[in-house]
Image 1 (cartoon, one colour):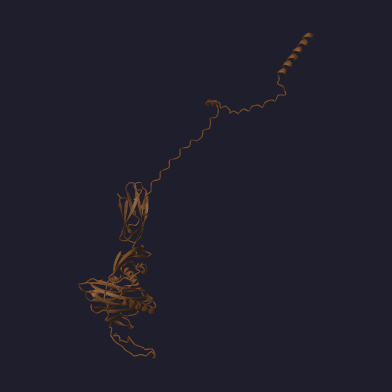
Image 2: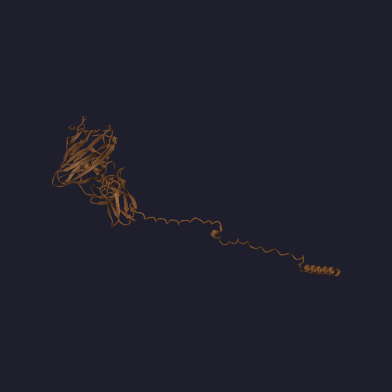
Amino acid sequence: MILSDVYGRLMFAACLVWALAAQPSSAQETPAPTATPSAEPAIGPAPSPGAGAPAPSTSPTVPPAPTPTPTLPPITASPQNVQAPMGTTQTVTLNGILGSFTAVAQNPQIVDVGTNQDSRTLSIAGKTPGSTSITVADSRGVTASIGVRVAYNAANLPSFLTLQITGDPASAQYVRGVVARKIENATQVQKGAQLIVSPDDVPIRNDIRQDNSNVVDVPVLAQGDQYFSVQGTTRVQVENIAAPRISPSSLMVSDYPEKLTANGVLFTADLRRNEPSRFLYFHYNPPGEPDRRIVLVAENHSMEPATVQFISGRGGPSPNEMEVGHVATRDFLVSVVQNQGLLVTVPANSTLPIAMQELPAGSIAANLLQLRVLSGGDVHLTLVAQNASDDPSTALTTGALLMSAVRHARGTYDIPEFHYAAQWSVNDQYLELPIGHIPLPN
């Protein structure tokens, strides 16, 4: 019993020693545990439908995005906006057309529209002034709109003119003035439109001697609110024809009625082949009257053309009568000394305006001319007052002469030749020589 107890204790002590020897020394450092990544929880097999587990949720199906409709190529027009002067046809070129096309005017009373399927063009002809649009459509249903305006041109500008003058020599200043006036008289301007042609724009800087010529290009502009503006160049050929100087045998005067209150014939007389004459007119268009124009018309009743030379000194229009008279006299004297004038050919059996001058209300116009027939037969002259809006070529040359309660000179007067001599000493008072005291027939 005692031996068994001792033996048991010895065995316990031996096991304890062995166990202690197997433990690591407390002096050694214990290494840090290695971190392990957290694992995703394992997904088990889906439970069978009969297992009672809830059915898994499903995301809604998103339909695919619709394919965008391709943009159809547009129809383009050149030009996009059309100006169609009356009496003309304009062409529009179309691009982007597929198949055949149509063109329809919104207002067919304004334009006529024609189509050319082969060339893809439109022909647009103005019928009456106004604005409208044209709709073009092709086989796809694609459309385009073209704006159209129809109006008259402000004027029909002449492209070429011939001007025959005289002068020994003809000064550059004189030539510039008559060239500008030639263009004005030859241009058909619409009512209410304005023609702009300035002598300063006539490129002549030197005198033109007899038997010489010059060709110039002159810029011209015509414009008006209701018209298409027209800008262009008129070429003028200026020829200086040698002509002998002459002395007039008579003086024609138109100063009655001086104040105009109606349109009509102011003066009429024959210009005979062998009888050169001077011609003076002086007329006043009072305020409140319509704007007028003075027109000198030449009528050739013979079977051959007649060539007329006239030298002119114009004054006005202006409300200042002293200035009008001074300018007319000054310009005439300068021109007559140099024999500066115009040559106009009046065709056989025809009527031609050879001089004209605007006369607005409240203004005075005067002109001093020297006229003679160089070739052909006698020419009948008529001075007419007409509205400024009327065509000078339609000036009426028939009818009774206009009358007035206030008498002024009108008629043809002989130019007397007289000689006056007086003796004067330098110590005497100023010598007076009275002239011009010739009684008038009327």
